[in-house]
Image (tube, one colour):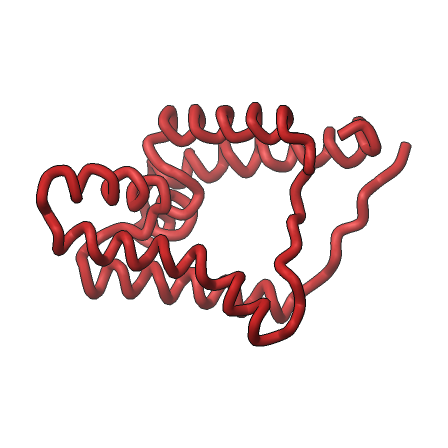
Length: 151
């Protein structure tokens, strides 16, 4: 069995975590909203349709920032943006559908429950985080140690 090594990046991980936390605090402080990506995407589509432009504009800016960040990083460092997931499109389509299903079933995503919900001491978010982290550990273990080289 082959295993896939994981790069240890404590500084980049810490900086990323601080920036995610800062964006969550800013969304709550400035707009009184949870920085859950699923909710932001969904509400961006529906807020414009409901003519709530003020609510739509901060959400659209948040999403544009998510898209612009890796591009700005690439420009600043000269390093290309790298894809770190499988290039297997059918596998990614199934994974995306499963994530979407889980997000709908759990009434939120990792950022909404894991970052914002836990910070608000939400019991529902704690259960959600325990479930999706358990599934993530099982998925990575199977993908890296059981199916290594197949995916």
